[in-house]
Image (cartoon, rainbow, N blue to C red; front, side, top):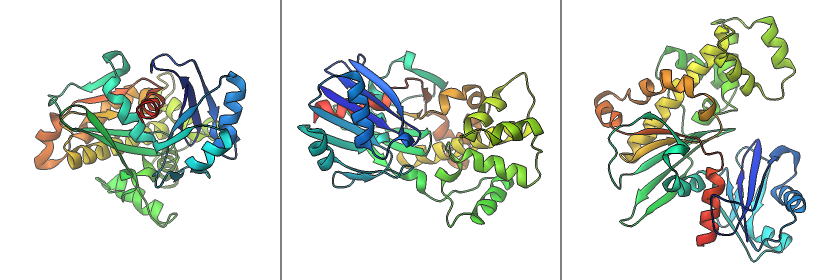
Length: 324
């Protein structure tokens, strides 16, 4: 049996598989920050499910080099050789978490997706994945004549490029606080509160007292901002502005990656945030995604889908482990 994992900055999803990637024998979601490392988290999970596994495969949020990875949004150094020894397994595989998503994308069905644009897909065309969760992940897939191959990327850590006056002000605001500003700083679960604070501190919108109290007691401001912005029964300008800016930036960066890899096979939005904000994506994503000047007609032809299957990265990590 194989243990597969999708390691995230906020939570880690684990599952035990034999052969069927749609039917794990056991699965669970654990809070990543409650554990000092992946070893302790895995030990806790295995003690609960009481299953004996022989191998493991983990998607890690960061570059994997020589079977080791320093997780991007966690203080974890993950070493495959050490995990093999400490867990008593015959093999441990590590791969980038978005590479794991990429390995599962060809397995997804229409029921696993929400389509923002049908586009005109090209058979065997390159596919792009942009996934805002705790951090922002990116990857792409290429066709080798027989199957799609997934390729990891750290493209989310390139320099943030504003496209309007609001975003120029946001960049200036963040440069006063960070040595460098990447897309990951603004277009992720960690980035959305940065947009919110900029709107508040620049005086573009006021923060209601009830919202200030709610944020003061929240461990994570991102779900509060998102839920408030999407609440049709409550008018909250500052949250609406923050989410709209987030969607615009996400669309622009997804379009950037689509151009860089010429994603004629389609663009897939993964991560935990897109499925939660589909109404906002429907309103503003495609406008900024396709705003590419002379290349706009090229981008407009690319299909765009939101991945709804929450286990996609675990499925991909399991596929990698089972085929290795």
